Image 1 (spheres, helix red, strand yellow):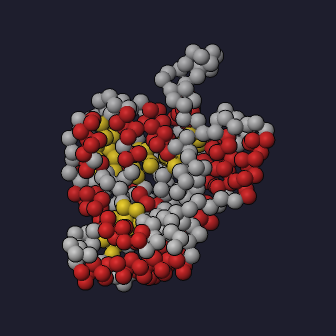
Image 2 (cartoon, rainbow, N blue to C red):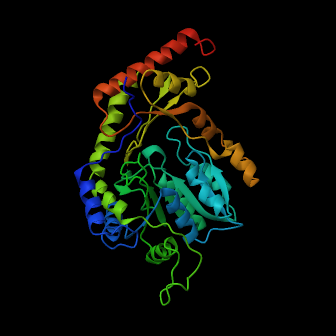
Image 3 (cartoon, rainbow, N blue to C red):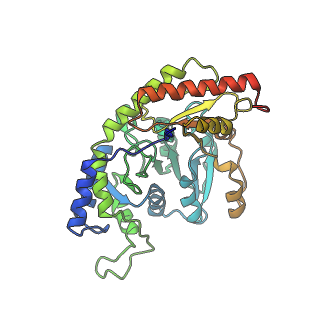
Amino acid sequence: MQLIKVGKPVLGFSEWFYVSRAILTSQISGYSKQFVPRFESEFAKYIGVDHGVAVNSGTSAINLALSTLDVGTGDEVLISSYTNMATFFPVLQLGAMPIPVDVDPIHFNFDPNDLEKLISKKTKAILVVHIFGHPAPMDEICEIANRYGIPIIEDCAEAHGATIRGKKVGSFGIAGCFSFYANKLITTGEGGMLTTSDSEFAIKAKTISSLSFGTENKFIHEQDGYNFRLSNILAGVGIAQLKRLESNIKKKRRIAKFYEHYLNSDSRLMLPSEEFEVRNVYWMYLISIKNSDKYPTARIIEELKKRGIESREGFVPFSDQEKVLKKFGISSRNTPVASIAGNSTFYLPSGPNLSRRKIRHISKTLIEILDLFELKGKTTY
C-alpha cells in the first residue's frame, strides 16, 4: 500500500530550466546577479511591497528582521504561542526574551486581547504568526502596535498569498518573513525571504544578511553580520515556483472544500474556516478534535498511518516546551488556548495535487477510526 503523504512539492520543467542555466553559466552563489535580484524583486511585487531580501530559510528571515531592529539582551518580543519553535528560536539566540501570547480558539492565531495585556517598556517588537494559512487579525494588532509605537514582524511561513481585503500578509508590518521549505506553498527546498517597504530597513537587512561587508573596504565590516544568502540556483527555482503560487493556492482551497464536504457533518471535529474578507490559503488542512481525551490525536495519527495515510500533530506551544524553557532559564507562561490546541490538533494530507478520490478515502478512513474509538474506548482500542 502506497503511503498518502502529508504534502509533496510541485516541480517541473521550469525549475529544471532555471537550475540548468545557473549551473551551465557557473553562477551558483548568493552573490550572483543572475536570478537572486530578480527573485527578490518579483516576490516583493507579488506581496505588494518595495523590497525583498532572499535568505537561506524562514528562520533566518526572522532572525534578520529582529537583528535589523537591533533586538537583543534585555528586550522582549511578543510572539503567538501556537507556532513552530522556529519562530521563537531567533529571539532566544539573540539574547532577548520571547513572551508567548495566547491564541483564539477558532483559527489559533494571535489574540489581540491577550497581546495588549503583555506590552511593557521592554517590548521591542511584536512577532505575528499567520498560522496554517489563515491571516491573523491584523486590523486589531496594527491598531495596538501603532498606539504603543511597536514594530510588527510577520511570520508568513505558512501563508504565502493569504490576504485581508486583498492586502497580502507580509505587507502589514515593518517586515514579512517567508519560508520556502519543501512543504510550503512554494519551495526552493530550503530558503526564505524578508519583505519590507522601508528602504532603510531593507538596506540594513541586506547588509546584515551578507556578513555586513564594508562599502569602501569590503573587509572593514559595518557591524556584526550573518551569512544568510540564498544561492543563485535556489533563486532560480524560486522564480519558477512563484509562477505556480496562485495555481497552488487555488488547489489548496479546492482541497479544503472537498475535506469540508466529507467531514463537515461530524460533530467530533472542528474544521478550518475563513473569516469574512479574508483569503485562507490552507497551507495544511488542520483539524481540531473537540474531545482529545476521548479521541487522542497521537492514536488517530497512528491508526491513519496503519491505513496508509500520513498525518502530523499540531505544534506544541512555547509555554509547554519544558526542555527549552529549562535550558534558557525561562519561566513558563500560561497560554491555555494554545495548550488545548497543541493537544487537540493534527493535519491531513494537503499536497496541491491531492485528488478528490483520495480526499474522500482519507475522510472516510478518519471517520471510521473515530467510530472505532467510540465503540471500544481509548483504553482498549
